[in-house]
Image (cartoon, rainbow, N blue to C red; front, side, top):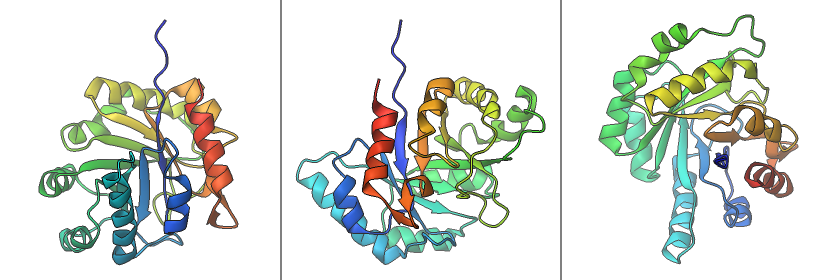
Length: 232
């Protein structure tokens, strides 16, 4: 019997080099910087400083996480400006970006692209495979991963609330058939990520507010989250 693959881990909304120094030794795959309007929004210059720190650690031989920039409907010029200051590994798009735009971002900046899909907190009806295919087939050759997140009317995502997880299998089926990774965000925390990974086996998990205390990243919660995801 094959062992279940360990999902990749993304800790999002990082703003401080002190926090990164405290978690960089953990098996975290991605660190996210939010450039969209949010209480976790970071300036390009600050993100550039944090990326430079990670690059210095990598130069010293440490395996460091890939950096992800979170955007909502960015313009070409905005991305050009930010990438000139903070050279990201992944660009995550959280709104109505088209497949053509995703493809341009991927090719122009030579980065991975994650595309967010907003899911309702309560599932009145699980989408059919045909509905998901109609929604996502245009993105097949344009993105590296689809990120399921809870719908938020203001920011698109980042609500800190879970969505209806019974929607996951139909998206996972599409992702596996299409050669695209399936990541899950939305209300994850150390106390519920075990259930998500054991029942639904996503390719990756993404957390932000679920590893915070009073709006500040909590090292103990981050450590607990990582341990829950990586333990066999």
